[in-house]
Length: 315
Image 1: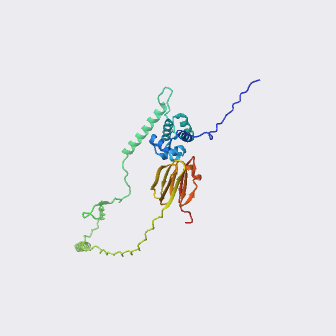
Image 2: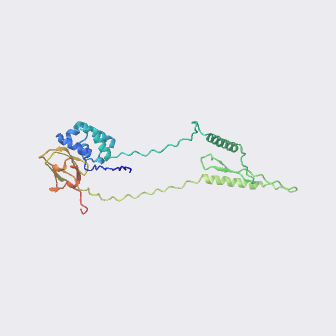
Image 3: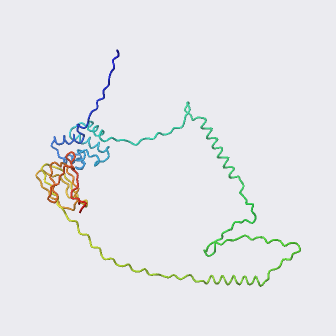
């Protein structure tokens, strides 16, 4: 009877284990350190520290830089660096681009190129050389059709369009016993006078007159009334626990960038909608225009990011 061994695969569920950001936040709170203190020690922005604890990697730079943040943060809190970095790598896998293989020439067993490749290259070069010699030594083609000629362009002396000079055709020889009539002198004189008159007529022709048309003046459009300035709205924070807070208005103007302390009430006014970041949302109550605003739907690991004061579609 043969004993058979059975292998069992045990899958570990990491969902119940805290991530690197959660572990860092717990260690910081256990040492009574604020986000502002950690940011000053690590020389980083408070917003990045809050995003790192919330594991909001979309708001952080490349993974290689965030790995350095995790190491520095763990070293500051006295934690082991490698487990936190390994947990971060599991949550943010880094995949490099595929590397295409480079084709290598076929080599013979003794380490030299194959003789077949050498002979093929020599034969190809010889065929190309013979084709070039035949091309350069071939005589130019001569047309067999009588009376064909190519007109030659001559530039005009006054910059006009080039004139064409046609070769003179040889007059046919008179037949034996046939007397060729001489041209009448009066006919040649009349042709020359007509050509001279035509040249004078062309030279004296005046260029066509240019008629200027005045463009009608455009009608003045009535002035457009300036848009009324946007009305300001109020945003009130009531703090029960310390929380880093950042608020910007619709124009990107920073209205708040500070650590709110417990028992503090901070009122802001600006052009809505407002962009709000709360480092510890459970410790802050938000009111917009006197009405309470629920931050729970926008809270993730105690950090809330939301917009408040946006106009509804019906407005």
